[in-house]
Length: 387
Image (cartoon, rainbow, N blue to C red; front, side):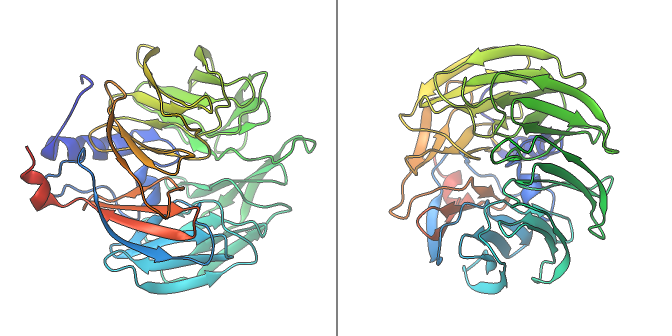
């Protein structure tokens, strides 16, 4: 499909297929209890309208998730997970933890979710705020967990230098893989899944792939740390990830681990890429640039300097294929897929930090470093009149 603008039902159907055919850390299907549904036509390239901001006791870096049609959950640095109403922002429940919650929930179809915490505990929590099981490690769960729903496996990396594979239903340990204990803050990279259920995770200067049974399939060794999380395009069979100190963007073959192409930047590449339905990877570097890379022809289509750094999980993708991202300028940028030009930019006195949650009925929910969660919405009726 040519890279360009899509609208209406074609956009939504194509986006729903895209969410099933890719894995990246802020893929919306990982953050919602239900598959993406067709909804009234919207101009996703228009600015969404601010609805409300809810105050929190501490910062919100965790990506908000939808665990029910009217339920949004997010982790907070005030040692809690909080559930609020999507329609009006009213609090529904609060789950107390023994440490800040940095990582983002991984959501199942029943609205339950798995989330790690700085208190060294990985938990599965129901949509009503009940703890279904917990698993204790020897270090914080800073990275986000991943659920393989087909095989009922939860993958989570801890700062105790171990990747854990747990049974999703019971929380029972299936296997674990430990890494070099001399590496600081390992594992920071969140586990990524390929189409066969193999799990890909970065540890120090090695990117490793394991089978669902825990057997190593391949590894890529580099000269710098893999701190971010891989994005996987099932259609092309290719993945993309960045390296820290030497600032590379690496494109690799998912099946074999063969490195296909490297792009060099002038800053750390620690942010987690996202993918468009047309196979464009959006990658940010601390050199201030966002890079748009075509995974099919292995070419850099564009790079745009936004004069800020990109860390953690700033990137997602709209149904149009355009990129949404948050920089250290605490603004939400929307960049055109084909050219990288800015389509719109949102600012708020409360700032933005987390990657946004999108919903098929036109909501945008995003956390703030300044102790808040912001709610925006696209209005179908208004947007249909936009020329």
